[in-house]
Structure formats: C-alpha cells, structure tokens
Length: 60
Image 1: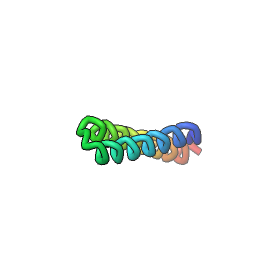
Image 2 (image 1 turned 90 degrees about the horizontal axis):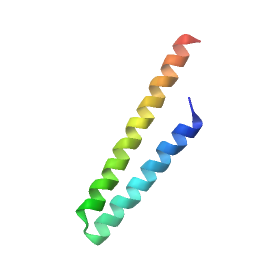
Image 3 (image 1 turned 135 degrees about the vertical axis):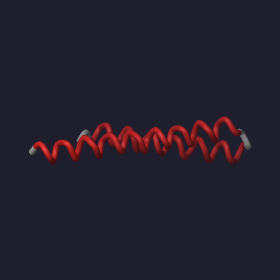
C-alpha cells in the first residue's frame, strides 16, 4: 500500500467534488462532467490500491 498514492487519490476526489460543485453553481456542464470524471478516477485509484493491498497480504 502506498500512502502517497492513496493521498493523491483522495486529493483528486476532493478536487473533483469542488469542480462539480462549482459547475453546479455556475451552471457549466463541462465543469460538472470534469468533476465527476475526477471522482471516478479517484475511485479507480483507490480500487487499484485495494488490489495491491490484497495481493501483498496473500504473498506475506
């Protein structure tokens, strides 16, 4: 498990939520979509880290 990778994923999620919220405030559909995409990327990154953790546990 890389704490740094998890922190980056969490930061990307926060960034995405803020961008989506900004898109809601301004009515900009592009900002909303980009914010949601960043949140989805964050979920994938967390999933990858979970898989890494599981593999490491199995090997230890």
